[in-house]
Image (tube, rainbow, N blue to C red; front, side):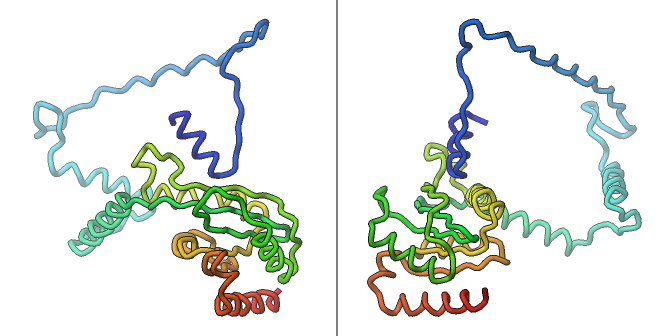
Length: 244
């Protein structure tokens, strides 16, 4: 993987790494292991009925299929029917369209509190949270019984690699976000997520574990100004607090 892409991918996960790029004076020489010799390929025998280029005849396709069924523990499985083949093609087309879908850019703050609580706040600018916004979040976290002391704060920017379109696809987005929430969330005992922002409420719930407590709401500034949004959030907080 390209170094720039690797560093960008790790940065969105909150991982910083350092490695030397220059040999220091008087540094000992490194003894790298000898590369393993390349495996020699056996000559391929041309089956009767194949063409001069060694292409197997159409009837030889059954052999790999039999081997595959044997490996999967289905030696007696019957060949796929026309209906099964059509379903496979349909799935293939669906995954192909998904791989071509590009996820529009957005940014959010990921804040992890003690006792398994994290808050994701959609951000339109690089400005940090105001003191009033931070006090509001602290009050929400304290109400459900967690401490308001921040363990980890990281700004996540999507796309990770802005110059490469292939790294803005839907599958890459899902893999990146799952890796981030696994490392900075589930591996550290987080089981409650507050998603503040309509974009986060759309993109992230399907990525988070179904067993998690996921509470979605409007953007933070709208939540602080809207009485109806506060009431809706209050209902979720009551359920969460009583459940604990």
